[in-house]
Length: 344
Length: 91
Image 1: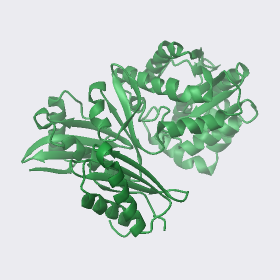
Image 2: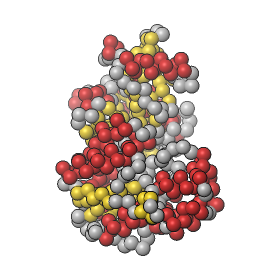
Image 3: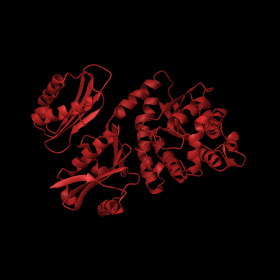
Image 4: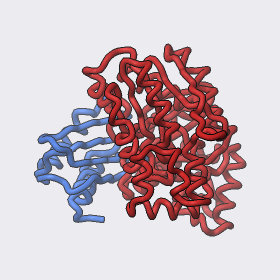
């Protein structure tokens, strides 16, 4: 008989068993998993799957046990775990050749970047719900709009410079803010600082990126810095952008800041310049604003906070961001920055 | 009556069904049925599901049934479990 149980990831013996099993299938154990389940036949592990946020990952089944309903068991187990944590909209990244297996279990295809990967989803409003939401936003806005996707961790003069230029050159500008809360500044703060920082510009909308804009679902390596995976996942993310996000917003141009520092983001920019024009979306890469000798970036701002303190950032951020940084509300975030070694 | 929260019952294994139910802001029942035997049994599945909702007097709900060939009695049991969990009566 088969039975399933949680794998205790803190016990190296257990974790290694899963790791070894996935390796034997030519798969890697996915980092960032918070929960892992194993299906066993006697002592032998015959299937596994993990959960990271709303992403089901690291799913593998021993070939000699395929067709025994093991993937159904794993998926059910992970769904229940996710739902128990209040996550009702789930994603799977998979190779194109295994997508059908998950589609049979009720997952729907969001986008595919052949030959690398397919993104599937289950539950929530789904991609069609998000599209009609975007259509409502753009209903009375002009055609031929532009778009910028930003994290703004936090909002700097560099972002302001890019946004100003894009707004000046476009009939309308949509600023899509990465919604996922894995950055040092929480989403609600990032979002508010952007709104405050651009409120004098009239032809733009700032909108939450939802779950389809560089979230860990569409682009997980943005958060783990694995550059080899980045190209494949960037293609998938851009596929989502060009088929599901740009059309309902009537967007024909995407602005992006040049990326001299972060290797993952620079791979992303390169893919963008290659893929989006094929879909009829022009890419405008804008050189970074320089203050002093160095380019202004959010990571430079965080670095300054980390080393010297908030006062050092004064000329790099707009007034709205600065007054947040010196307010009591920011204390906790600043403490986190000082302790952190993350780039994001 | 309305459910307190989203809930799930059953499984995606053969001869079972996975039921997801969720309170929504409008009245009525929004029902999505996906079944491996949809052609033959969709009506029957719908009837069984609606009956349980009626028995428990549930309204303003979204129900998704992922049927893997469950018998009527299994479907009903899964529906009941989902409803009781959704009401907060069952863990």
